[in-house]
Every structure is written in C-alpha cells, then in structure tokens.
Image (cartoon, rainbow, N blue to C red):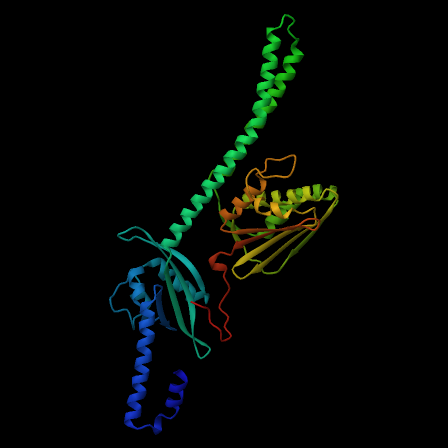
Length: 391
C-alpha cells in the first residue's frame, strides 16, 4: 500500500479530481486502520514531536496514568501528564538524550495499586530522530504472579533447608546425648572418675553446642530477608579488595590468578559487603576444587544493560547430575562446610536483581557467570544508524 501511495503522490500533478479523491480516501483509510490498531493495543502509546508536543495518544494511556485534559493532542506533554515522576523522567530523557527502558511507577487505583512501566524511545522518520515514543505497560498482574512464584520458591527452599538443618542437627545432638549418658553412668558408679574425665566430656559438649549454634546462625542468615544497603560502587574495586584478602591463600595453594577487566565498566548499585561475601564464597569453592594448584580467571565486561562477571577455575569440575543441585541448601560433596555457601551466593545475587549461572565439566573446571543490572542513569546514550528499538 505504501509503495502505491508513494507512486501516486509522485504523479499528483497529473491526477484528475476523481483520482485525487481516491488517493485521499486511501490515505484516510490507512490512517484510520493505524489509529484503530494503536487504540486497540493494551500498551499505552504517546507520540511526541521534537518539541515535546503530543501528536497522538491512545486510549490505554488514559487508563494507566492521570491526565490533566481529555483532549491531549497538540499540547506539550507537561500540560497533559499529571504525574511529576513521569514528567521528571521525560525531562531527563530529553536533557541527557538517553533511551529509557521499563522504568517502574506505582499508582493508586480504586481496585488497588497499579504498577506501570514507562519506556522512552526515539521516533525515527526517514532515518532521523523527529520526536519521542513513550510506551506504557501495566505489569501489575505480572508482578503479582512473580511475587507468588517467589513465595512458592521460598517455601520450597525453606522446606529443603529445614530438612537439611534437621539432618545437620541430628549428629551434634546424638553426640551430646551419648556424652551425657557417659557422665550419668560415671556418677552412679562407686568409683567416680576424676575431674579430667568430666572436663573432657564437658569440653566435647561445649564443642557440640557451639556446632549447633553455628548451624542455627547459618540457617537464620539464609532464610531471613537480607538487609541490603545499595549504594553506587565499582564492582572492579570490590573484586580487587576481595582478591587481596585471599591472594596469600591462593598463592600458597599454587593457584595462578588472572584478571581481565574491560574498559568502561559502569558503576552499579551494590551492597559491597554482601557482594564481597559472595565473591569470597565462590573463590574459596574454586580453591577447594583445585587441590593440586591451578588457574583462576576473573573476567568483567559490560553487555547491553548488564555487567557480566565470570569466575572460572580449572579444578576437578562438577558431575552433570549435581549441576542442578549446586545452589540447593545443605548440598555439598565435601566432608566439611555447611553446604550453605553457594546458597547464600545465589540469594545475594538475586537480592541485587541479578542472575547467576553455572557451567562445569568433570576434569576441565567450573565457571560462575553473574549478570548484574546497570542502574537506569547509566544506560547507553541513543546512537542511531537507521534502526529503531522494538516497542
């Protein structure tokens, strides 16, 4: 249809009145179809020119955000949108010439709070930026579904952890019971043992009580909501600080360290103490896998709107049947440790809205791939070569 219209317009001077009317009708019909399609969308769409004047707004927008007028077209967006936070976001996008993806806003509604995401993209016309396109989506249902899924996952995880803790507690409790019985029998004998006997058994009881306390402390740390204190930090600085702590151990173990930090890695919103704990847990896990020395590589780079951290060792690797269990609480193939180290790593990364993956092969080694989101203000500036983002 567009090719037909382009050819017709090129011959406009040679068209008679009937042909011009037919052409105008074709244009009107196509415009009506486009408008009808946009009005039928569940996503809100606002089209603005380069001066911020709204040329089109669909019906979904009016259901999502408060507006100052029922006739929003041909007005500046500041005279139409009745929400200071969204206005602030649009102004920021204009001033910094940046694209915005899925910035969340909460609105009160008669049937409960609604969560709306706002994306601001450049509007291209003939490969040139001629304005902005604002896309609004109601993600309330998705957020509620995600929350239900997280609760279900938390309940399943808690059930597994409780079973694991019960198993862990049985051994020290059994040992405590045995040594109490030994002391009770000794007290009922005619030849009561001397103080050394009781001191030895009381020492064992004290050790087992301390062991129980450690199990409970680890359990509570794993199940309680984390008090995450997010501040802008350089992930590279946190990695360097962590490496300084374990470098002597790595060198003593004959482990060679390699770091590759690419340029322009943006700062992130992180809790530096928790991220450092996660890194140390992964590094110590790698050390335990390289009993005869080896090579530990740490690679950091930016990818789209994330920062990727890869920690790779050439240790013994993990059997394929255990790969899906590695982050489960109390799962360990070692004769030492609580089995909660990687569970806490998983939880810390999730608390930072990140993702963590594990790749491993027996006899080759293991890689942890962590992806952490870049804060909104650090997203890349708009650079266009004739291709537009998909709405």
